[in-house]
Length: 174
Image (cartoon, rainbow, N blue to C red):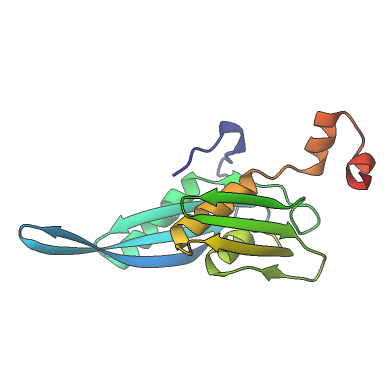
């Protein structure tokens, strides 16, 4: 997976209630001299629906163990993303491997207009109104990683104003 910055990670505390969403389960085959060995790979997204989200992968010989491993992995990779008035602060694109994504802020009441893998990440993060488009590969693993990468590149208006040395009104009015 890609590296997460130290300051973006979130510590799990007892008051965070995480909900998990299963994005996909794939059967994987290892061919050896003795025959074929079957296993399962699962990808899971966890989040509190209030700006904290994490993704995890798990592999095992049976489905339920693979899902549990993925959930544990996702809980170790939690990050906080900026959400402004139920949507994202600005338009963002990102790519991971063969998948590229475009996410745009939307007006109140639009809902989450996104495909399956992207929808799981955005809803787990707590984004209520957003427009999203995936381009290139539709592989769920790469789509989830590209979506998380795009969300990590977002900057909230307060941070932008402090870096530029201006007021919040100037950030919004241009």
